[in-house]
Length: 71
Length: 406
View 1: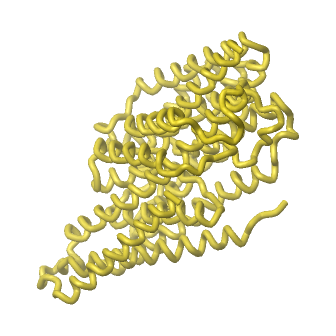
View 2: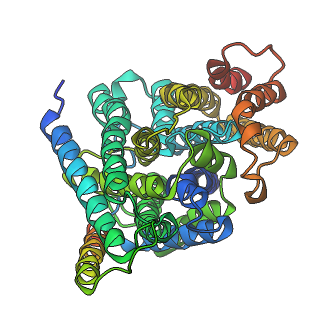
């Protein structure tokens, strides 16, 4: 019986990296656009720009996901 | 010819019924945590999922040429009766697990049903044991582990990164992100599972000589399969949604986002790399992982254990029911009729049992009842199907209809 361990390992690796990466990037976006719970100042322009870049990356990932489903 | 046409008609209707149960069984995969974090209202969530399932059915024209992915040898005399019996087994198991509020894989139920019916009708030789291990057993074990670890790590990370931020503000972001991931899961589900039904119907049409072998499904098959799965999804399997959304662990917005993103990633990565993992097990695993990832998060292992038992039983139980059904259906026209009548009776009994303690989108919040309820419901269902005392619950579930059938 042939078990394709390589493919399974690949699925595991890719899933882990992509999930953690995407969640991390999206969280950075959230961090960049939100204010501290202590009631400090609103996020700076720089932080906001970075945050929108993060969101754009995530949107691109969703687009790639749709591409995979269609293809 | 008249007879064959009628039989194929029955197979088509049964396939659409299976598609429908598949829809409401699997709504929870995409929408359970989306609902419990408050990202979407229950009715809106199932409506969105239904639309995306319908869209998904039309998205891909790459049809499952083999309905079982090589698990059974479809050229070795698979007749419409066998497909019919397999579908009945899958439907009965789907309904029983829905009644118990347990998420189990609809694809595994279909495989189990087809395997059982094939063994009884054609013999062991027509079943590819290697493929069963490769395509069902290993993915079933691997899916929750892969998705669980990914979701755990992602949950830890997101809590750490967003520490000290205003929770109300971040929750908004998480909910928006979760809607996107849930949409991807729904879309992928529509593409995969609606196609399975299209494959079944097309195979039935081919065996009856209505369409040429290896042809694409006719448009009406695509439309009806898409509509059936969308209707099922819109109905909402509230019992399973409650188990996944609240039964396993209490889901906060960051966890919901991490779990759903993990699920979407694992489903797409696995099907793209060519080691398809079952959607149901991926979603359940990622929810457990998200539960473990939050400090103070609690995973209710008793519920998780019940789910695991259901997963183990899906293949043999659906196979047993289908085997009994195949034995009957092989007896000729009266046998097929008997299977159809029995199938309807069992479905009716399960539905009647579900009405005793209905779960709707309004009663999703009654978590305390949920913790103790499922076992009682299964017992009630078994008593409705056949009187014997409730032993270990699930072997009974598989045996009862088969015994009634033979």
